[in-house]
Image (cartoon, rainbow, N blue to C red; front, side, top):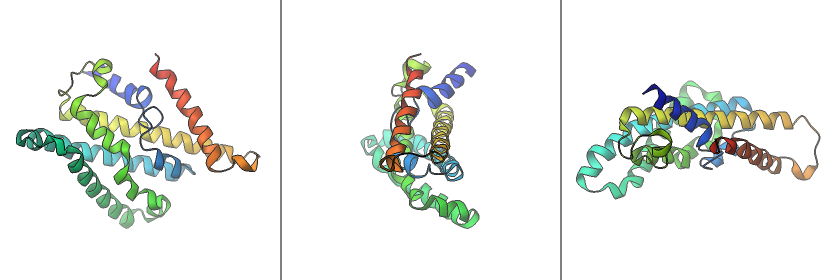
Length: 203
């Protein structure tokens, strides 16, 4: 069991990172990575939504949608659930952490359409490409393993966005051609990060 959890950790953070390997959740990754504090807040918010979404969608799919034979509607149900969770998180942040709420801006409600969150909820249902890496047969993850993987996937997102914000803050200190400032240099940094993480897929 511990070996499986360790493999989940390595897989979610490096081998199958949702942002730099699967290219899911790129919009907030690029939009909120201008400074480290906002990036960290977004990473934590996405992680919380991933865990809560998995906690709700896995039992819903397993014990309601599949027995009723309407599992083909899973994506519609999952999106509604994720949207509701994001709305609740938005209200909590607005009331208790208004500074973070303001810094995240439009990207906070965009977690609703964050493909990384939907990707986690889909992946833990059928095992996806993880069967060979983790040795867990498709459809046998269970809620426990699903929540653990959702946590690690969120930490992987957090790692990627904080690393990106650190690189962007560092690059801003250097002189560069006007044509590279802003979005162009961000794309260059993202490409280099993707290449660095891609090395783990070949191990």
